[in-house]
Length: 153
Ligand SMILES: [Zn+2]
Image 1 (cartoon, rainbow, N blue to C red):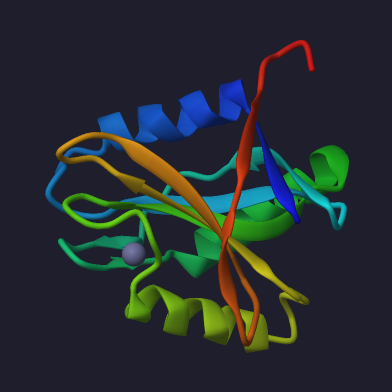
Image 2 (tube, rainbow, N blue to C red):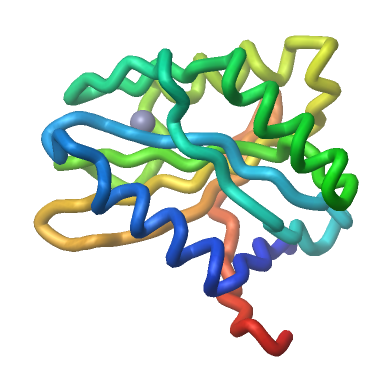
């Protein structure tokens, strides 16, 4: 089974972006970059929402232009690729919604992104913080176990 390797520093970055989001009743998110090695997927960084993201209570509309810039920077830094995204469900269940799955399906169909599978990290913020990862292909969605890596791993 595939496993997500998430450095503690990147997890802390996600949690601080969640905390900094000025309207906790609406969703926020950003892209995830890293290396997909098959059995493990190594996360190397996450993006901010971007200036043109639209935050709503049940929907987060991605700023695709900003996401492309984050992905290009990551590629130049260490050949990291756009492997997925993180977003919040302020009151919800830590799983992709039907709307999320339709969005991921369209990203997987986008030939310029060259994605075979997509990592979705969903963070609930109330009543408590839960972080869960999912692996999505054009036909399947499954839970992706997370291993948090401390900085010396
Ligand atoms: Zn969602």
